[in-house]
Length: 355
Image (cartoon, rainbow, N blue to C red):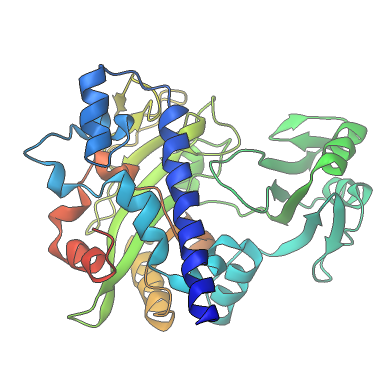
């Protein structure tokens, strides 16, 4: 009985935390809307920004997964294995065991102390990181937990000069930044395919791919894919919350639709071409698309104990690399396609009590 009570209390605590997350998201949002719109949204489980961006109303709201469902109910889907997705190193080890290409991790930073991982680079002090960069290595430094692209740095060198996010910085400045990090990881910098670099070169432009299971057919499926692109506002990341763009990917053809900006403000703009580089986005076909989808679903099938994943995928010259998995992925891509239009998606969420 004590164990049951402890489990219930733990679930209750997690639910309270998730309710706090949705409340924080609403209160911190720059979206402004009339009070009736806000009240309508809150009563139906939507953030105000979602109602505005989706064009949600009484006639179509049943087609969208609400923010209440996303924040409070979907975190329960993966059960105890959800924590594996939240831990970057653990999840990369799981994927690597299935033959998936993942970035190498070189260092863990915890409470300001650096712990070397593996033997590829000597990496126990900030000076070690700087020395490795100056000899030609390239790294991504990012917080160990959290998301949204906050606190991410790309470290590299050019002609003997140390570069942070492709701009020259002094060695002492970089050492000082690293020494102040309370927690983080240092991993391999993955070079993206030429098409993505052409569209925007100063960010790693990833594809968010949402997978779940069709239990009637006994197989996983791809529910949505959206390509993110960095902008001059978001360097070095592509996150929409930092000013990046998002473009829907046609699941059958791999072709990109027009990209949207202004995801977290009231000014939504559509772009056939990248607003900073002028390179075409709409109509571009993602290379290796069929092989990427097939490869990812093959991993899902072997990893059936984690049925719900928001994958961050980099398409490379030779294939694809998975950088992260998300157990409670953002569903803002419903701006392009309401998820519940697909009966398989509805059946999946209903199976886990998320709707």
